[in-house]
Image (cartoon, rainbow, N blue to C red; front, side, top):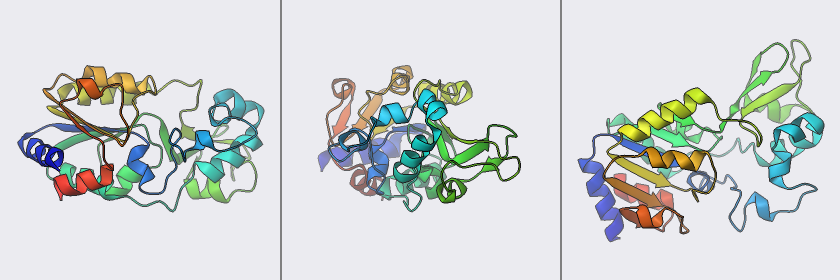
Length: 240
């Protein structure tokens, strides 16, 4: 594929690469996305996923929230795919300076990436809303019904940005600085329709913008290279 050859050359020439990724980066690991034909939006529930995954729903119908969350959002058996592994390798080589992700699954860190800005939080961080005690995702998954703190009995909340909640300022600022300093921005596995996360792309000032996504995105016309292909295959060939 000529496009992959071009990407390989650009990666070799770059000194400050940033990767901006979304759900499509994890679907090849078996983590469901929201908007594809097989995604969560196309499955049947008593409430739409965006309603269940809202702050007000978490407060009003906590048990129903956790029933959905534990069944559909905690893919704890998922393992990093070739895209995650290639990005971690680029960081080890000193090429990749940051991963900015909309995902909450922690697969970038599992692959070995260190500089990761998790815009929407992580399922692997959970805290008691009463005493602040930390709990991992396995504790949440195993807890019957609504997870409660084993120290004080308080309600545990995932460190995940729900609808109606704002993004963490420190994470956003770090992501903006990384994107603004990049000389090669690779966007992968995202439809670029979820805001405010997608809006961070406008801070890029470099000369080469690469888009890797199975489907077209609103930014395709602005990219210097567009690859409509599985992201894992692209990275496996481009980094290898």
